Structures are given as C-alpha cells and as structure tokens.
Image (cartoon, rainbow, N blue to C red; front, side, top):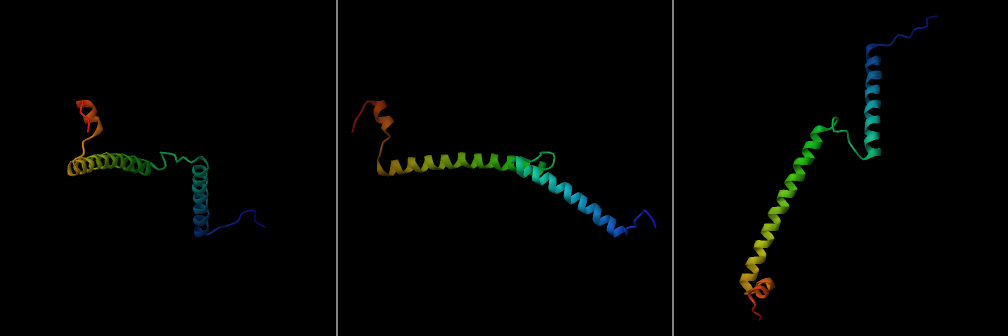
Length: 93
C-alpha cells in the first residue's frame, strides 16, 4: 500500500478555497467580537465613512441655517421681536 493519497487539481483547488474562506471567517469573527474593523482590510469603507460623516456635518450646518432663516421670516411676518433685542434696547412691550 501507498502512504500517499493523490488528489485531483479540482480537489486541491477546493481545499485551498476552503482554507481562504476559513481565514476570512476568522477575521470576520474577530471584527464582530471586537466591534472594530482593521483599517488595512477595509480602507475603502473607512474613507467612505469619513466622507459621509463630513457630509452629514455639512448638511446639519446648512439645515441649522435654513431653520434660522425660517424663524427670522416667521418673526418678521408676525411682527414679533426677539426678547434679547427688547432687553438690550431697554424697551418693553
């Protein structure tokens, strides 16, 4: 009897693929367990996340400006004066 086992190339490829899947699964399990991803493994996601966070901050600033503008227009439409202006100018209603 022979001590060696012969495998076809497709069987060898399948075993190598299973090894890669196993390593990938180990990395994914580590990321899930720690809640962190290795930046080297997922640099595109890191950069996309930063870009989206920056964009969200920019949009929040624009939204605040729009809300202030709406409040100013509503105050002008109803004839209201901000309290701070009345206190500063020394006048009362």
